[in-house]
Image (tube, rainbow, N blue to C red):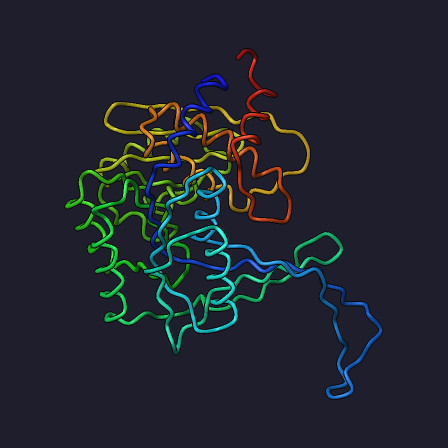
Length: 337
């Protein structure tokens, strides 16, 4: 693709209607200083200092902010937050981006908004303190959420299905409800990224990394999975799942397998320190937007690969990629335009 083709494709994003259902979180970054010389008068323990706190959307929320950065202006979310300060922060961040939160359920009791706290001490991330990852959603609340999703699917172009938490919104026993909707709404493109229960999805496009693929197939994960390993095991999984498979391979690029065959793009030879946190979310968001805009599989791969290369160069953050950033990287690594 040349720059003109990339710009033309991005012009289609503004008309897209994309939904995201799954596990929404807040990533809370702050600087931690432990050697302060201060002790608490109440407890006699050392006092640590925090500074420069900043919150961003994580998990399924990171997919949403990636969609927004790409220029998708009609985004709808389906999930749950707690009636707490982090839930209010999440709603504020969504509102700042113009996201439709009509089906973001505020659970009044026994639900903590998921938060990944990421303290940075002397340039290194230290032990996280996580909130909300052991939440349990009642069947009644899930039924209400699915009813809202079903109602909205008639107007959506793409639905992204996310599962990240160990105790997720979309548990194994609830995936059948999603599969049923996927079978009914054949005009909607479905893209899934499911860390633990992806093997139960039927149809659509499932994004996996090589470790997840090995886990789903219960096979050993080699230290350095080569292309042949990915193709062999990817096709085995694809035949079981009845859908297409998108395999992220780190610096080796991205591989796509469907009934038409195999497409791949090589990773870019990036220099300097890299931070891969959230890169998979960028791939999912970019693939979904390109797919919804009618791009070919190879075009989707090319843009997703560029977008991920943008975000991995953004350190200590769940980064996003915009059109100018993607075009700049394309110009840097393209031999001709």
